[in-house]
Length: 103
Image (tube, rainbow, N blue to C red):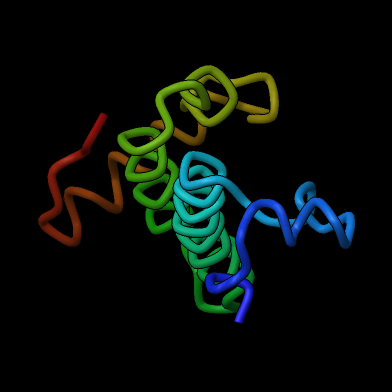
């Protein structure tokens, strides 16, 4: 129904600020897609069977879509307590499971 209302009618009822423009709708749609990707990763990270290798691969995948997170999700990020240990474990599990390290 809102699509059928004219701009004049929207202004008369003080609804003109409540309707998204095409640009704002597109921005909101993209934000929804981005949040869905991040939610999927956080869901995976909460899985009790998640391994360090799986977490590292998830972070590396997220960085592809969100390069601005590279410094926060890199193997040497400040959130990593022992970067050398993490890299060693990931390398070991990658070798055992035949995965190539991404990133």
